[in-house]
Image (cartoon, rainbow, N blue to C red; front, top):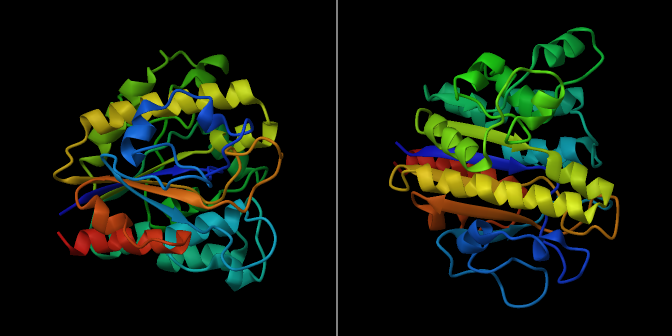
Length: 301
């Protein structure tokens, strides 16, 4: 059966051909190799690369700027979460969105079929303490894991090479005083590929793309994208494209246009690589299509 890996990039849209687009400043050979050319809102369409590529609408048919809670819920469940609550919901899921995740997320559907699923991100004890004290809430991605009964990976998993921190290298943990050796981006990608080979569904969340967009810092965004590209390079190198399917997508635009500090209404990329990638990506037009394509990849096996 296909082993599906979803790399979720928060706040990563397809932007304009302009100086405000850090994708045009960053060196991203792997991203370009997968897409065929750098995806832009204007100019010739991306295509002809080693992967499959599509543009997905993230507005969900509602006015206003797309937001994380409804966008992620739509991406992970295949349901129009913004239509459900009547608006674009920021940050954390409402109770109704949480119920949607509990009933229809890809992780829940995988477990219901007897498949193995995992959330590859590392969680610290401090994070768990803040949630326990009700000083922090779970995002949609974390709720998806917990509602499916998945264990959150911790520092010990990271030390064994069986998890990846959200910044890819773990440097943020070192800065916070953890006695860890930072991981090279390519090596982190290889670790994720090995972890994904052991599960029918694996997902990894990288939210610093959204943070960089809000900051409107070109140097920061370019450095982040180049780190991401090296990470994807290690991941693609270590994948078995015959048995593993990689999907890369987002919940809304942001980092692709640093002329504004807000989210954008730009479409988001859906990139596929590996096992039956053209079938998984072909015809995708909305972020609500992605969850169904993951489930279909299992049934085609």
